[in-house]
Length: 215
Image 1 (cartoon, rainbow, N blue to C red):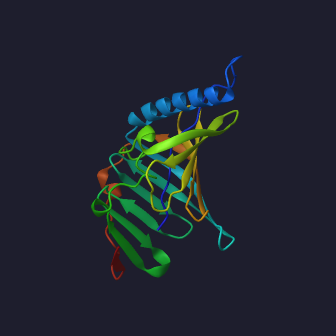
Image 2 (tube, helix red, strand yellow):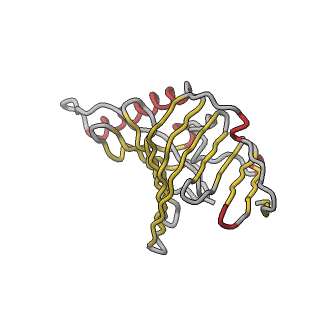
Image 3 (cartoon, rainbow, N blue to C red):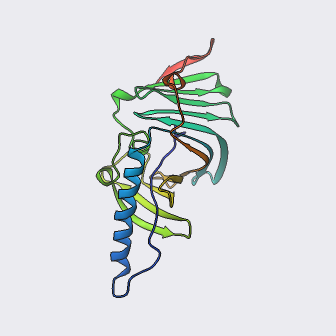
């Protein structure tokens, strides 16, 4: 079950001062962006956006595209609605529900039994970039920077994460690469910061006659 958003980083400094190595400059850029991004998201309690998610299967040579809306709320709450399939992924921070409309089933997972998810902790308010990842500057553009994050400790399903961040230190895109080389690419637009969201948005009641599977 990999329908989750992954998030974090990118930002400033386009000019290399004379006499300073590129490696040193990159390190300073990373340090600056990580600090500003962490600070930015510490002041954010809720986020809503439209998303497009592409999944690239290296082994099968197949690409799938889905889209919908996502809302996040601290601590640890999320709601993903896949408009293309009717699927819904909901978590109140304790229980994760994944409703698969075409299969008429819901997968229920107790998050307290498996700890936190390093790929989503940052956006939902329980992660720390410097603590959880080693970070390098992968690329820089006119409007965004791209950071590559590698977990400091081995994580199931996560080899590395690429984060695209705009100059307002808001994450606008993520790519999660698993150990097999498969990629999940999420781009965000129509991003709204701190909209009022009730906790009930992150509660889920399975529809009648739906099979519930305890994962």
